[in-house]
Image (tube, rainbow, N blue to C red):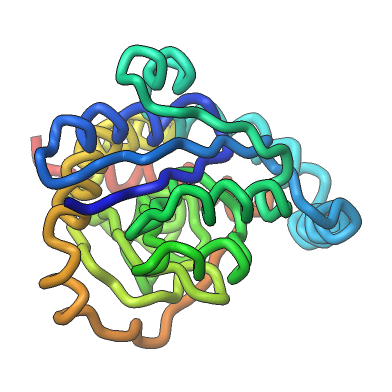
Length: 259
């Protein structure tokens, strides 16, 4: 039996989709769910500094447009994780900051085999090294091609018709650990960029729970086969100019897509 501890930074979304699927497995035991505050950091100054640098890089219009686009990546409505944990009798803890001492305490007390990250920012080694087998993360895009990227939009920027998802090992960097599972599938193009993103993300969200369960159930064999990632590229929130390119490219790809 694989003992799993889940770490999330939000009460909805991927964590709420994956928890029932994991609980349904006779090979996985979810020990507990740890829900940190979204965006919270044990070092607030570093967090603000990182956000400020990003805003400077993409500009005010890019920042505001990025905020406007956030709902596009939700994947559809889900139950609150507290409601699900109560239904499934899974302990839920709220440690505050993601990489805090309290999170460390909760991970040590869980005595889990594997940690599972579902919707978090950077996780420090003091956290991901605690479970016996370390931690894995779900990235809703192909790796190593699209590190640190929101799904679909940068593929469209690059005039690609394929998206995907990846389950990978967590290491000291972002989205660079060994790959345990990777799946590719077509982008579902629509007349507007928003429709393309929301519909494709919805399809990705449906696939994620099964991928997570598969990796947890077959971790030992997949770990033997996993290899370090090759060289990749990291992305961030697009500038407004990048966004306009995405809109134009989506139109071209939609008009050229087979009916």
